[in-house]
Length: 590
Image (cartoon, rainbow, N blue to C red; front, side, top):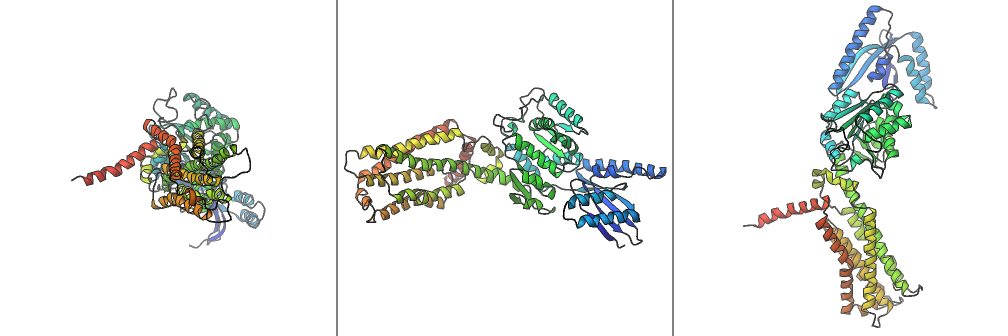
């Protein structure tokens, strides 16, 4: 049988259904509609004018609702199907409005929705479908690893509540021992009452879920089994908040109810929002962004996830069967959800460690050079006298110390990817701000101050009773500061490869060659300096003394701190080294 498709109303997040108008061979026009149960059951025809038909439709509806509940409990994605015959008058009225809306330039979506409302009413229930939507490979393991890493996982889905709970159990987001807080309100007052009762029942106080720095506590304390273990009345069972889209309509529009939801949600280990519209997903992400200092990441695979992905600090799109809208709107794209585990736990950790260290190192690298010149200015009565050539000052950041910074910033790794994937809790080093914090910054600045004093005063006192000229001292300071900052970088480098050796030690060699070339130009005031002072043994011993005295406090501090207060990263590094050394020792034994 051949059917003519006359018009099509696409699915949208407001209607939560789609419809098609078809003409049968007998010239009868019918509209076929499919959509979510909460949007379809409300537009069914409850009075057909015939008691027998009303009774039959009532039984069909009860059976369909029973099937929907059964399908949802099994984790199936459900749809309700309905139809309606259109008479000639209804068809012409719809067709005129549909054609006008389809060609409209302004408010086209709203006009199409208005045209759809003419025919998407008084439907006859045909039945329901349940489609199995299997989880991708590695999803349960990825979610479990993210939770072990201290990352709070919230699921925002458009599925039925029963389906969402079933999927939550299958992907290990929900567990049987969790206490479920279910918020299904149909009015503003009821939603407010349910939220308040949940807070009172589980003894949740305002601010319990948020730390002093505005971050959610549950994401940062690895010693806590869940965020409320220390609160009375909870026992050992973590909390899971389950809330539907209807309740969110009333909650997100009111500041008081939004605050209640935030306090309750941040005190739960798991949050599961079902039957939510795309704008509600973005609203929930904005709720967290506006009330905490946490970074938010949203991941989705469909067009209904675009607003959520764009609202989050980091958006990740999955390229799947639902199109590429999410990928086009995202910051990162991947083929499967399980790759998120490696993106965060491995590359996220490496990136934080590199960026945190490079911020401190670049402050140190520039400050030690500037402070060295500052001490010199004090002894020249703040005159314009210079001990370094302009070329040396420019080349310091451009050539002498730039390449090692770039190479280490790209290639350095504190731990291997296998260790980071095997121990997800190592990701919490970023939550504790171990690579960059104010205390570490000021310690680095004190170390910088000490090194600048050593660079200036060791040559000053060494050559105080000699007739050395200022350009020779400037040559010594230049070479000493370059060697010092590169050896300083070498002390902190965790991963040594061939290019790392070339960059660090090669920069020192390039510095010496550049100084020789600059001192070989007759028009420069420092002409021939390196040839005269470079032959002196005192010159090289002074540089060696600067390196030793400058780095000794840092070396001793690192040794003492790692011996007495080792971090999780340090322990994991030692375990990695032992795993490499012990097999080699066994192979060497006869």
